[in-house]
Length: 101
Length: 101
Image 1 (tube, rainbow over the protein chains, first blue to last red):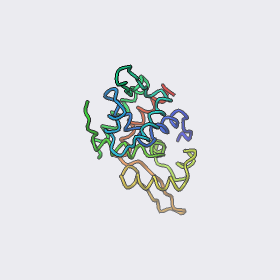
Image 2: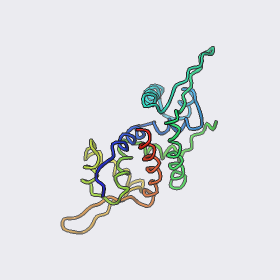
Image 3: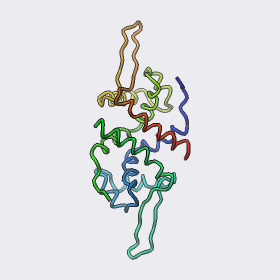
Image 4: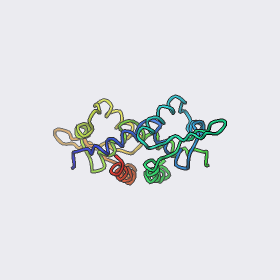
C-alpha cells in the first residue's frame, strides 16, 4: 500500500472538496453565467458565499471574470481552460450519481 | 442553457464535496485500511472528524466497516461496490491535478 499522499492530489481535493465549489463549477460547465444565474441555479447558496468562492476560483485560475463595457455593465463568470478540463471529472460523477442515487 | 440542477447531481456533489470526504475515499481506493492508517495518511484530519465522516459514508453505503473476531479485534474500512465505482472520478481528478498543479 502506497502510504504517501501526493501533494498535488491533496491540494486538488482540498479545493474541489470545498463546500459549493463542485456545484459552482458544474453550473459553469455549460458556458459563461452571470452571478445571479449561478446564485439562482444553486439552492441554499448565499450571495456572500458565492462571492467568496468565485474569488478563490479566480485566484486559482479555474474561473475568470469577464467584464463587458456595455450599459449597464455586463459581468460574466467563465471556466478557464484549466477549469474546463474538469469536465471529465464531472462526467464521471454524473454517471455515478445516475447509477447510485 | 439548462437551468435545472439535477437533484441526483446535487446530492452527490454535496456528499463528495464535504471536507475530508474526497481524501478519505481516495485513501481507501487501494484497499481496506484501519482507522489509524487513514488518520495517518491524511495530514490535519482529526480522529473525531474521521469518525464522523466514516459514519456518514457508512450510512450512504459508500464505505463498509469490517470487524474481524481476532485478538485483538481487527477493524477495517473498505469501499463498497458503490464506493469503488468512484475510482474513475478520482482518476479524472488525478490527471487534472498532475497537469495543472
